[in-house]
Image (cartoon, rainbow, N blue to C red):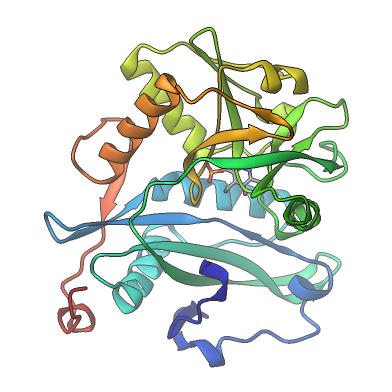
Length: 314
Ligand code: PMP
C-alpha cells in the first residue's frame, strides 16, 4: 500500500526535505478548501539495462498545468524544472528492482478565496513491486460523479477524490476492490482511480471525459496500442448495462495500469480475455522497455549521482 509508506524524503519548496519536515500550515487554503491539484506519475525500473524511466511526464505536466489553470492556482514551474524535481526525488528514493509512483501536488499555501494565492509544488514518492495487476472484483457505487458545473471530473483536483473515498469505503464493506462511479445520467463515468473500458464484439469502448471521467493518459496510451494491434477503439457514452453485457472489462490508470475485471457485482465475466490480454502484454512490454512505441514517451532519469551509486541491489 503506497499510502502507508513513509519515505525518507519529499520534494517541497524547491528542494528535498526529510519526510517529517515537509509540512504546511493548518490555515492554508489547500487544507481548509481543498485547493490543490495533483498527478500520479509512474516510473519503471528496467533491470536489464539498469535504467529507470518515467512514463508520459510531458502529458502529466500539461494536465497538472490545465488543472491548476482551471482552479486559478498559479503554476510557474517550467517543464524542465518539473522534470528535475521528479528526478531529484527518484534519485533519493529509488531502490533497484522496484518501481516508483510519484505524486506531484500543487498546493495553495497562501491566499484567501482565490485572492493572493501562492502555491508550492510538493512531490512524494513511493516504491512498488514489479508485478502485473491481478484480476479484480468491482461494484457499482451508490455515490456518483458530479456534473461538469459542480465538480469537473476532467480536473485532477484533490476535492474530486472525496466521492471516490466514500465509494471505496462502501466497496470495501461489500468485498470489492474498486467501484464504478456513474454520472448524473446514470451512465458510466469512471472508477475511483481509473477509467473503465469494455470489449464488445472485438471493439474496445470507453466513455469520453464529457461523461464524467478524467482525461486519462493511460487511455490515450491504450488507444495508440489498439491502433498498433488493429483493435477497433471507440470513445462513446457507455450504459451501465453494457458493462454487464461486455465480453471483457478492464480498468486503466497510471497506478492501476491495465487491470482485468473478473466480477462486476453479481456477474462473473468469462475467463477468456484475448483483447485485454493482448493490450496488457503490449503495455507491459513498452513500459518495461522490451519494445518501443514512437508515440509512447518513456524518459530515462539520469542516475549518475552519489545518492544512487551507494544503493544495494535487491
Ligand atoms: N480516473 C481517476 C479518478 C483517476 O484517479 C485516474 C488515475 N489518475 C484515472 C481516471 C486514470 O488517469 P491516468 O490514466 O491519467 O492515470
